[in-house]
Image 1 (cartoon, rainbow, N blue to C red):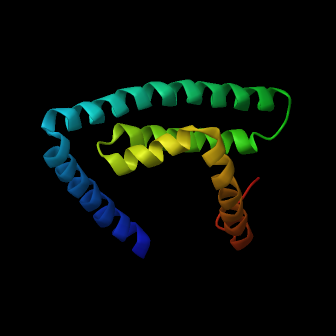
Image 2 (cartoon, one colour; image 1 turned 30 degrees about the horizontal axis):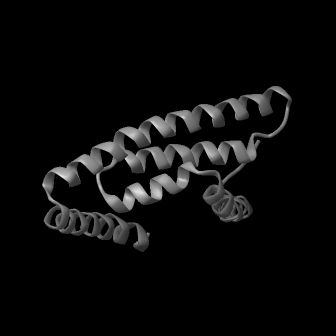
Length: 127
């Protein structure tokens, strides 16, 4: 819970400082242009990746397979899209990372461990 408070205070502060520095270094208009391009382009790319992940999940469910990794990919793509829509360079960086396959492959084992730990403690129950 402490990390959540730190994230809600630290990330916006770092984003604001980086945006101010960028505005002073390259100018206001280029900074705004970069933010708009990453927002619009990121939303488009997130939509394309999301449709692919959705189709993979539907394919797996139609063949009676568990959607496991496809579901995790869908959640990561959704989170990446949200991060890209938010203004700022740090959130854009992490949002772009979540849209590509290889970073999700690195993150996926951590998500699996987190889910299994929650299941073991009874916080997540599957029926």
